[in-house]
Amino acid sequence: MKLRTDFPDRQTMIDYLREQFPSAVARSPEVASLRGGRRAAEELLRQIDPARYAATRNRMNGAVTRLSAYLRHGILSLAEVRLVALQRGGARAEKLVNELGWRDYWQRVYRRVGAGIWQDRESGKTGWAPRDYATSLPPEIPEGRSGLACMDHFAQELRQTGYLHNHARMWIAAWVVHFRRIRWQAGAAWFLEHLLDGDPASNNLSWQWVAGTFSTKPYYFNRENLERFTDGVHCRNCRLARSGCPFEGTYEDLHVRLFPRVPMPEGGRR
Image (cartoon, rainbow, N blue to C red; front, side, top):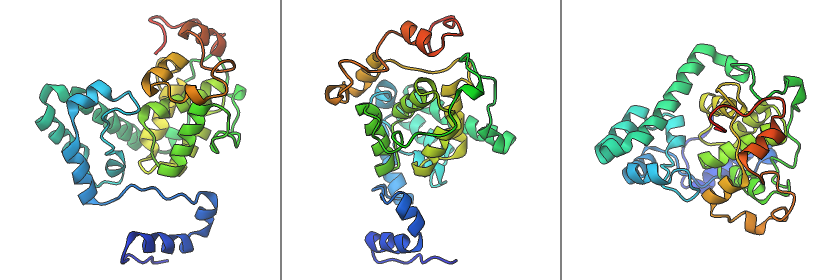
């Protein structure tokens, strides 16, 4: 089937694609506001601030680049972004260049193992066997109605915008895999369904990094960490904030709860 490529405006294009792909619309009718193309990519590239990125990247309102979708679809290259970062930030661009390096590494692993990125690259480090994990997501997780204000907000943002801050992705992955004990593959497939920047390499291998099947230990977080980097906006409106928050506790407490069969790693949590 050959699709049209000439449209007088964006809305006409959206209407046309809705007509052509009704099954996709039925599954997820949202349309992200992100603009594609080289011009939009170059505008964002001109705005990057490597120093502020390094200082604030973990915060939900931090100075992230938002270039990932353009890198994913080949509109920008890693080398191009690295060059601009170094020109603008010098030594202060180290953190941003390091993150570009991780993206390059994921792609090299993907080239080598192919479909193997859907399989555990290493044995898990959680003390749980693969059979101890559910194989699919319960509907309330992707639909954003779990009752946890933070996770529900992130799930809805993912669906509506096709994007999530990297820290939010890590929190969701840790929640799904470690707190809900669901196989990372189910979460990875969910993300790929919605992320505009979702490529199997960065997505799946990052989920494996969190799960502990492609890292030295699993990644997890506590409520204090989440509140710190979100300015507590979700906890203020969460009915589970006073009692029932699964993320409440020290990292030592959570480790005993989540991974009772393995000792706390040397050096503490990741």
